Length: 165
Image 1 (cartoon, helix red, strand yellow):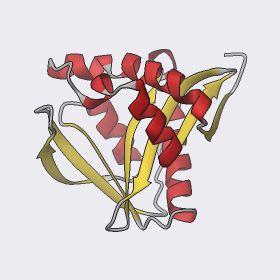
Image 2 (spheres, helix red, strand yellow):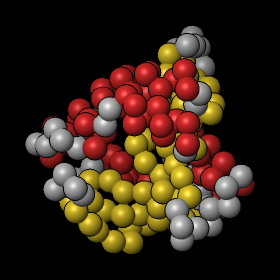
Image 3 (cartoon, helix red, strand yellow):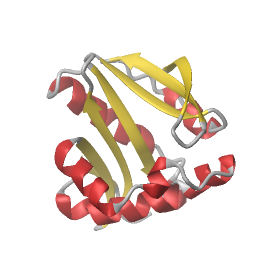
Image 4 (cartoon, one colour):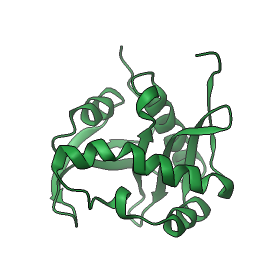
């Protein structure tokens, strides 16, 4: 690759690149469900800026380019809601998603007191489900998103990070 991918806390200057990356990355999810109204595709730039300012947001950078991102925030019940994990399609399968998850989980647990982590993905999103299981998440329920997509809810306690080949 020539350069190594670095993981860092997102800044306000990253919001536009995160917004464009999110739109690119979630096209395949939308196609999988035949639904182009999923939240990452209808979220506007101002909402992304607000999340970068208020939430725990990490990016993966290759040089100056944002090639991955993830967001999280602690909810009222002490769990951390993690979402919108995405990695540029040309770099998927190289462990960047797992590195982003590890970074956001560490920050949410150590700096914000999260005791467990919760995320969700569409029920047909096998690649996402494999990643989440590999790093220690377990399915705890199902729900239907506002966009009508059936979701699998996954959780794990803070401090668990199983990574197998």
